[in-house]
Image (tube, rainbow, N blue to C red; front, side, top):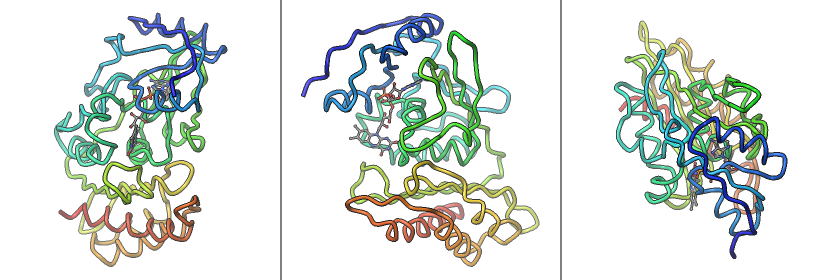
Length: 285
Ligand SMILES: Cc1cc2nc3c(=O)[nH]c(=O)nc-3n(C[C@H](O)[C@H](O)[C@H](O)COP(=O)(O)OP(=O)(O)OC[C@H]3O[C@@H](n4cnc5c(N)ncnc54)[C@H](O)[C@@H]3O)c2cc1C
């Protein structure tokens, strides 16, 4: 199918994009970033925006740099930017380990980091990373700028707290301390498919015990979230098979898994235990 008719807008600056969005958002106007989710939905007529505001010509949105201890990822930075570490240390390595799980190579050359965050698919790898690390989302409109914490940003399946006239101009990820350990693991039936469940884990070690544990699960519930029970099971314990197993069991018990035609809630719950354990095991490599 071909998309329904729409009006195309191609702003060159952020201010121009915000002015157009303020005008067209109330009349079914949508931002077009990499188009890797929106365009297929339009082709199937699951989405019929009356206006598309294409931000690809806004150079300022290509920003990818470290400022104030955070990696700032502009709205036009593609997934493929992370094929190589974009920053020294564990954060750059974590993003490189994660990116290869997102879709397929051609999609990664076009789809954007911020587009994934704004789209808020429960099985988005970047959304799980954003929650795990406590990302900040920078939302701008002609009314001003808001900085939204990851915990307050995701509202449910493909739903965020962005207002319709707001542009997600950048996402800021805190740098991980140099001694941080990290792991990521996801399960899908075929390479490139959306994950049925995934886990991101980071922590530090002091005096042989785990400190600052962060464990986030994606793909299992309507939105990604950190699992406090798993983090509590790790804190202060040695990073070994025994503590990882307990954390995995706590995570599986804590989730309220989604169910669909091919995957039962019980199967997903079981999988959450497995992905959490394997993500933690990855941290020892
Ligand atoms: C076959 C296939 C497999 C895929 N597999 C995966 C996968 O395994 N994991 C995964 O995470 N993704 C996957 N994707 C989706 C892909 O990663 C998309 O790139 C991503 O979801 C959306 O980014 P985009 O830049 O393409 O956004 P677009 O498609 O342009 O936009 C998506 C939505 O977000 C809004 N939006 C985009 N940018 C902004 C912004 N800056 N501010 C406000 N709103 C904005 C748009 O208005 C639209 O509603 C897959 C896609 C395909 C086609």
